[in-house]
Image (cartoon, rainbow, N blue to C red; front, side, top):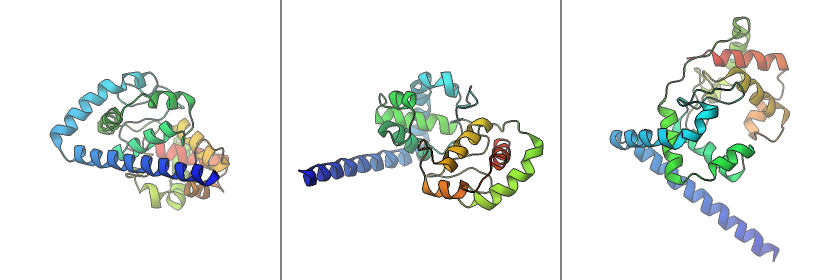
Length: 206
């Protein structure tokens, strides 16, 4: 019986992975077609109406503890939507909202937010130099010199400082809210004041 349960679980996991791969391939096709992309962005603006209360109509967060979605890589956004839907990322409010979105609506939401510009935020100037030094040592290899990430790694440039500080701390403290082995390793030795410095550096990047 246990073997049957494990086999069923593997089949479900494989099916979910294949479905997500198909959605990502569809996203790439949309991104390469200007007409399809414009339609997806327009539809995404309508789909995300219920997100605006927290993330803002243009993807610039209204709340310091809520991330900006504007300017993120669409493939990264789509993957985070999937993770909320499966519970891999923990947030009861987000998990409930994501589950009602169909695959096409998820594609449209990711396309819309990715198309929006994200302005740099105000930072504590006294923290920027130290934050830049720490970022160069610990983060630049994955997140890039400008902190803009890629298809699988988050854009950090221009992100809300309080959100960055909280998220980095969660990785360091292994709270289970955010799970990533590389991030846990990179942040393990950071002191609280160093996390403050890094978050201030990143928030002011264009």
